[in-house]
Length: 297
Image (tube, helix red, strand yellow):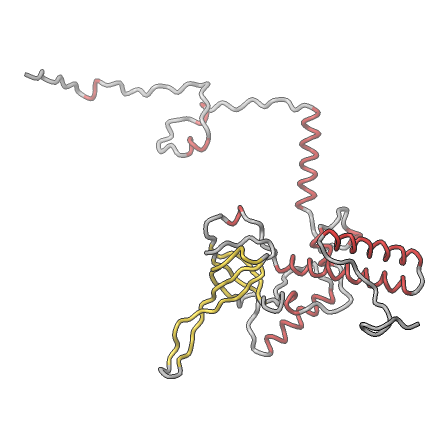
């Protein structure tokens, strides 16, 4: 047989709560979550502050100065009011080209660092689009799913949903279109949902990836970053600056400048070395005379 349980009244239990130890450390977040405030704020002992050594103070001041310099970075200021250099993207954006920028590079740009001439060109294009009743290209984006990636260098195939008109029935049906899309950083995989910008890259590639809407598999932060419209514009301007510099160098060499002629020879020799390394034939100067015939003096 089981023994009888002894029942004790609840009033015999001690009603005095144990005092917390004065040397026990409790975080303020835990203290704020206490519903009845049993833990007093006075019971929290402050952490003893250690004395700062001169070396650590120097390091902390240097860190604060660098953080202040990064936080005060403003590329819109003129060079006379800046004590720091511009990064590569802002430098190329701020430097104006001697000719107009193509519409496909300028229509998606939102940077305030552009030269005044290029800003005026961008605003003129947007006003003209509004007059013609066209939508803002920055908001009118195409979205599709990547169905093929890795078969072509920096190029993927994207399927965009569309509608097809069936004349015999007289109604629209769901359909799709496949587009070759330029992927500058090779950061897309099959299954990604992406948004596209219209840009003529080659004869068969008329779009460039703008952003990843929904990644498939690998997270976005673990992939190569996709260039922004302003970064694409800065890259285009950098290529144009190099080409214009080579053109001016060849003009100076043709005018008889010996230093320019020497630089042109070095540049041509470098091109020939790259061609031999890639298996291509070096550049051959054109000669007079008919094709297949003898040379004429």
